[in-house]
Length: 461
Ligand code: SF4
Image (cartoon, rainbow, N blue to C red):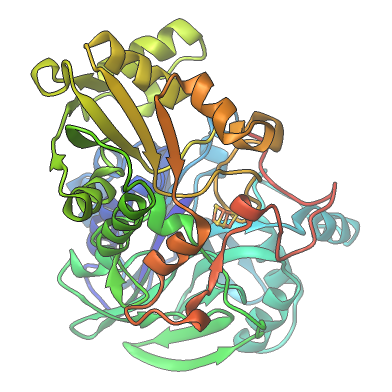
């Protein structure tokens, strides 16, 4: 999970890219970077940590002069977290200076890596993204042909922004796994992971980049856009709407917030026989689903947790005691809201089950009478190979247990998952039609769109 942004034909390119990256910070907190071109020599600045800590006034205004910029925020687990893998990656090759920022996971990375190693390629990073630059550097012809032929060799998930000395390029894989949108601010085009990153800096969202589309931007104009490959069906990650994307981002003609409200409304219909005093979200991603649930069920909506936003990932240490301690610091129930109540508790998903169990236990310690746990997606039974950090199958609680077994493990009085049909309806275009099922749902079905084998690349978590 990462966030990317690119802007061209703008004297404030680095400043606007960093502002967009702040908006995309939820997609990755471990490292951030910006590459600039257009005024002086192409230059990349990367560092570990949050955008606001890395990109101060001095760096943005004095050290990153340029009229075009691409930016990246990266999510990894601590094992893979290093400055070496912070993006954008920049190279100098036969086609000039090229930098790339990537969101996704290239599933045939290991296979292609083997091939290019035989041709003498040297790798400086350990992530799959570098393979793109090798493919581009080893191809001959015009930039357009080089990009298209390189992308055709890749499998899996990749939304990309690529920067050359003169050109900004956006690419989305033919399945459209990860989002990528096009917008405009005055005379500058912007490409970003989410529409909110464009709108927040004063730009206007224009449209989604199509699955399989390459869009080439120079001097404030779209010079060319074309499909490098077509797929029978779009497979955009449905988890983007369940959890990852910002609620104010637009997906399929409506905000993510609206989709989450609908998830809650469908959950309320699935649970119409369950009575409770209040509906409560697990902050923050359970919020809108709980609101939708309350609207449909007419059960009172209450915020029963105080969340401490200052406890970051870096505080999480690899021991159970410290993890429990961190969880207590992060989320505290408000006793007068929950004491003696039957509650419907809404969360976005259950992966390992440990966080939900800890939360339910915490609420019971605060005197909650009954907890009906409702989840705004189906049970996660398969790992993700398309760019989301989910653990392998043996660590997924729903891959190895029935719903009743999970309920018992969590200590909930009842457990309901939103069914897949309702999730698709909640996330589809404004006018729901059957043909609107354009989603990847592989982690809920265990059926994948690309060949998954022992050589399929996935960062090990
Ligand atoms: S497998 Fe799940 S998390 Fe991964 S892209 Fe598909 S829906 Fe999204």
